[in-house]
Length: 102
Image (cartoon, rainbow, N blue to C red):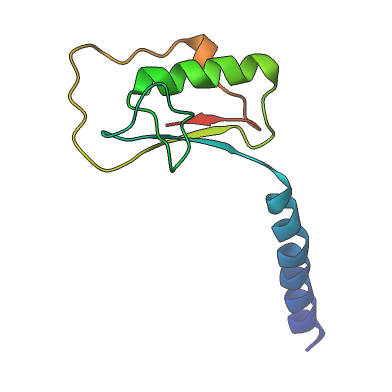
């Protein structure tokens, strides 16, 4: 019986201590949509139009500070017609604790 209680207490401790920590990290989210504009701020309500604008926004924001949760660029539904390859360089990378995710 004591082994079962030890297991239950361990699970409860993991849940209790990991959930608040996950809430403390802040990820900056940018949105891209086919009906967006590259002059928009990249919010869900006012998305950017192109991946390049999102990449450039992340580059600008990284010069100020990289948030603990990193950056996530969300692509809204639709068809994104491309004429050029979307290029990312080492400058566009994040870190293990602050990733840049598209």
